[in-house]
Image (cartoon, helix red, strand yellow):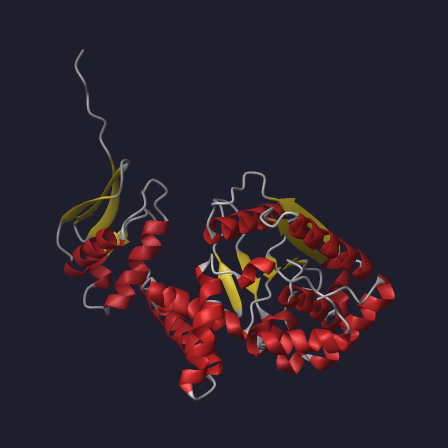
Length: 354
């Protein structure tokens, strides 16, 4: 969208108008309730690409939570994949944040290559944001995912065989484990999950708030773009009902189920102080409970290598049976079930004769 609003007064007025068009009552209720209970001195970070969703997010945060303005920090990451367009995105974000009095931190993908995947770009962006948040001791990151993103993410993950945890993404309020040992846990917050992309864009247009369009979104290089352009419009027409709302409801229900299973695992306390998994405590439990417990145990093993899907299923079966077993976890060691417990055993170094 072309620049129409200029200067501090233009942007602050646009933010006020956007907040009237997209009131708190229209944002995700879990986020609104969560935000109201947060400490007043807590700083909030915002992922700002310059696109319509992230611009709307920043304007709504600024307008709906005025007491937080002085503690807002926006992060913009230049992937350097679209030449001058990428540079213009960064310049746009600087003007917007300057007008609102919001601190902006910019990063650039120094080691990028045009052949890198969408996943690589996303990983680089989040690595930058996580590092900068750690430096500034920020824990809360606000993200502009909206209703359309739910359907796109669900279809992408169905294609690769994700379970309930993956299909429950993106969550409105998502507490994540610390990115590194000794770090602080992070919280991702998505208040726009109740709003359609077209609804957000319309509100920005009426409010007089411009945004940047990513020309690569119109192409078919990435899976998400192909779904957005070729699949979802036909899927919505074929459904004969509000398919986006249906996907959002399914996501909510899957999250409820996932939370219940995780609570069940919590109650079993399957991982001991010595780091072993109490296989005997899992006997007779549903396979979904065993799967979560095993996932948790693997995440606590820094020396365990990447386990293939087939390898995980094989180890899960051994846990389910509860019988003595030994499975390779890469070049550093093995997962060993003995005496009703699963432990990581280091690879013994072989002695060579000279």
